[in-house]
Image (cartoon, rainbow, N blue to C red):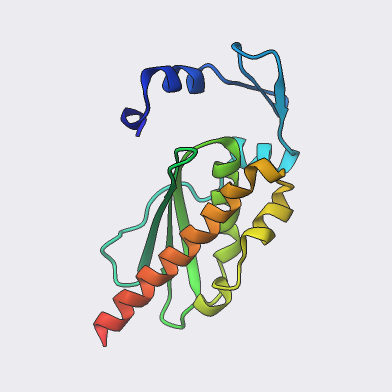
Length: 160
């Protein structure tokens, strides 16, 4: 996905360094503190990967935020009883976007499709202690969950 970025933006992103939960950019003398939960999910992301998008029991949600360049793919695998048994994600974005995706996969696992629909961006933002400037990341994660659930339901409707 790096091909979507300009050279200057890509250099800026590559030049960011993570050190003790703080992002430092050589171009800027200020630093941005991330909550330890964001750093944990960023450094140890849960459920990274992909599921078979063509499988009838897999729903795929692909969402993006043009304003900040974050792109999030979230997939769910549902068993015969309507329970989400697996979830995977791939995200191109900032630490908060990656952490939001990682947490979203943990939140949906073990829930029914209907229960997963009740997960809100505020749940994700509160758990990760996201600052107001990063709330769009939790909104993107909620949208990805809803898109994956919608894709799954469409596949089930076509089966019947």
